[in-house]
Length: 347
Image 1 (tube, rainbow, N blue to C red):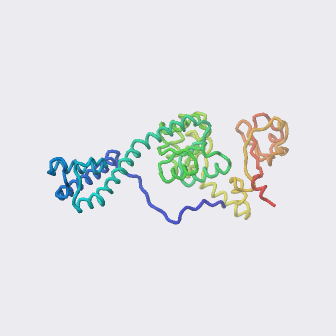
Image 2: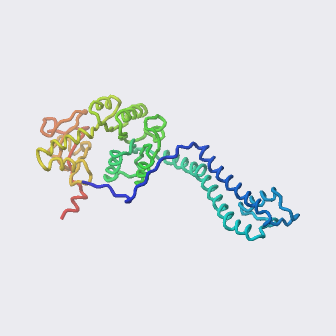
C-alpha cells in the first residue's frame, strides 16, 4: 500500500486569528504608542542627563521631540544625552525599540498592503490562465488522496485548483504546486472565481453529504455540461447526488465493503482491485474512445490492452455480450493496461 510522505516528528496546534482587521491594526498601534510613552517617561525622569544646545533647558516638549527623533533615527544633534544613564538607556532600550518599530511598520505594510496587493495580482493572473483545469472541492483525506493520485498519473499540479477552508490543508496543496482558494465552495462567487465554466472536471469531497450535494447543485447551475464526480458516505444520498447533477457518484464506504467481501473469496482479489485503481500498481484501468482502425472489431481483439466493457449511447455492454463483438464509431472502451513504469522496473 502506498504511504504518505512523513512530516516532522513534532506537531503544532494552530488557529486562525479571530480578530477583525481593525483590531489587528489597533493592537499594533497600541503597542507602538505604549513603547513611545515608556521612552518619553524615562527620558523625562532622566532629563537632567540631556543637554539642549539651543537654550540649555530641557522642557517636556523637548523630551517628546528628542524621543521621536531618537526612535526614528533622525538625530539632529541639538539635544544629546550627556549622562551615563541617559546614554545607556538610549543604547540598550531606545535602539531595540527603534529596530522593533521598523519591524512593526514593515510587517504591517506587508500584511495589510503589499501581501494583499500581491495576492490579488497573483489571483487575477492565475484566473486569466485557468482553462481545462481540474477543480477539487475539499482537501481532506479523500481529496488529498485524489490529488496525489492525479499527480502520480501525470496531471500537472498547475492544472489543479483546490478549494477548502482549512489553512493547513491548503498549505499542503500549495506545497504540491496546486492553485488554492480559501473559500466556501457552495457559493456561486467561489466557483466563478476558479472559472468553473472552463474547467475540465470538478471533484467534490467535502466530508459531509449535504455540503457535497449543495456544491454539486451550485456547480451544475454555473456549468451545465461540466463532469462532476462526488463522494458521498450515505447510500441514501447517492440518488440525491445524481439528481443534483453529479455525473459520477462514489461511496467510499460501499467500495470498502466490496473489497472486504471480495477478499473472502480469494486472498488476492482485493489486492488486484486496489492495484487497478492506483497508478502505482502493475496494471491500471483506462477509458478511451474507439479508434478508427478498431471499427468492426470485437472488444477482445483490441491490441492496446484487455477490453472489459463498451459504453454505447451511455449503455454498458460486457466483453461477452453481442454488442461488444463489433465496435462502432462513438463507442467508449474501458480496458486494463499495464503500467509501463512498473513493467520497466521488472527484471
